[in-house]
Amino acid sequence: MAEREVYPIEVEFPDISAYAEGNAGLPYAYTFDSSVPGPHVMINALTHGNEVCGAIAVCGLLDAGLRLRRGKLTLAFANVDAYARFDPANPDASRFVDQDFNRVWSEAALDDASRDSSELRRARAMRPLVDSVDWLLDLHSMHERSAPLNVCGPHDKGIALARRLGVPAWIVSDAGHPEGRRMRDYGGFGEAGSPKEALLVECGQHWEAQAVAVARDCSARFLLLAGVIDEQDLPAGWLAAPGAPVKVVRVTEPVVARSMDFRFAGPYTGLETFPEQGSVIGWNAGEPVTTPYPNCVLVMPSLRQLRAGVTVVRFGQLLP
Image 1 (cartoon, rainbow, N blue to C red):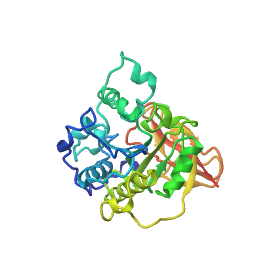
Image 2: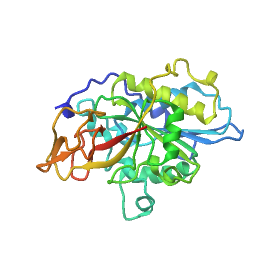
Image 3: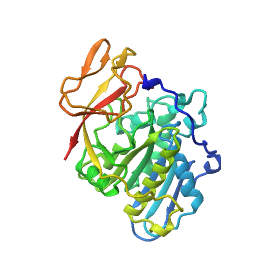
Image 4: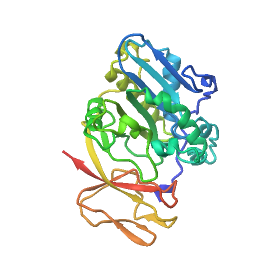
């Protein structure tokens, strides 16, 4: 089954210890101010500790010494404790330490002093900085090898921003996960009426070299779209050639595992489309899981983090 395929590690994991000091009031986060009016833009890496492409892109931006023309720019590494645990012999194990960092971004979780984890402590430390951000790009990668995705949230403003960015070609509009709120949905990022903007880009399979190229291209285009730099300020070779026209998939529902007893009907890796309503795509605790409408698209199927309560795939509809 594709869910257990072993992918080669094609990229070197950078030593990020040189960035530990930070300058934004917390370790591994840097904010630069142009002193010219403009938005506060943030590019975030390592929301998950085994998703290295974003870390390589953020290292590259820090090392390049970008000339900031307008506004502010924050470059951050999030779950550094999980990243420090990365083991090539068991590469999926360093996704998080105690819980998924990208499921703790509700006010209730952040404010509940009775709850504690490595990820909650880091999110609480980052919260004041994230509160000050106008535009957020959260760089991720995927368990399975699939086309990159621009995950833009449930609102029209996110779809519009993803269309303007123009990359990756596949845009996924969704409301998140039952397990908890993502950073890209935190606060004003997840409110339809707020001017704050956020995108989450799944750049490719975790350890493939092409995911790094996607992370660089998306970061470059995001900074240009926000207007905080000019094109000549970018590191050489970061902008890729224009790609295919975008396609938008609206996620309608998640499929959540009831237990460890979940299996797919095929070697799905993502964006498989089923013409017929009622097609069986797997079994959840012995019961068939079927597509709820014609031309249903599978979004990010994977069993690598399988446990009760985890979203193993999402169903989506193509929008005009």
